[in-house]
Image 1 (spheres, rainbow, N blue to C red):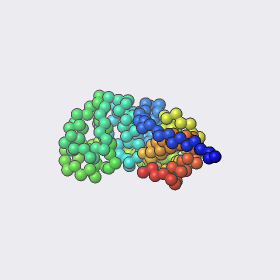
Image 2 (image 1 turned 45 degrees about the vertical axis):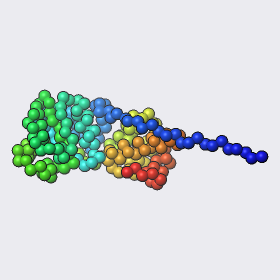
Image 3 (image 1 turned 90 degrees about the vertical axis):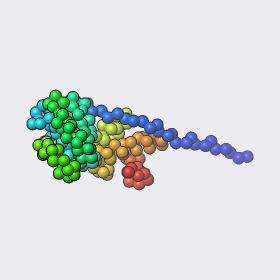
Amino acid sequence: MSLLRTPEPPPQQPLPLVWAADHSPARLAVTDANRAVAAWLAAPALWPVPVSLLVGPQGSGKSHLAGWFAAQHACRVIEAADREDAEMLFHAWNAATPAQPLLLTSRLNPRDWGHGLPDLASRLAATPLIRLGEPDDELLAAVLAKLFADRGIKVGDDLIRWLVLRIERSLGAAQAVVDRLDAEALSRRRAVTIPLAREVVDGQFSLF
């Protein structure tokens, strides 16, 4: 007489959820890495001209700060401005006013944009440039904690510290690892812990 084993249920497939970014002032993580930039963006009325340029490497938090700025002020934001049409940028610069300032973002300094439009170059030369570097440990930890909390995932400080030491130093990497850990935890019906994170980050799964 043979014994039949009940087949195990297939892993749960996580639903493709889109988590809305929260750009409210209370949710912005501010550390030494971005404190000066946040202070500048908080007070556009004090800018010498109604345009500013935010420059920083990929994953430094430009988009988050730009979204936060747009949520607080009646303004216009043009991201990746170095890849936009020079004539459009020129007219956008001229149209900016103290009541509706303009924020440009770019990974490159204006001298490296290669647009070849002297009138735009002169205006960019008069534009305050604010710079972001790579996130520091404190900012990366705060962003990771926020991303987990946004999904209702309870994690320990030990996991946050473990991730900060191992993932790429960018806010994009923080987003990617939280997305992947959330998906793997749902699929395997497991809690988000260091052992699961070790499998995702160090071994079995590729984030990028």
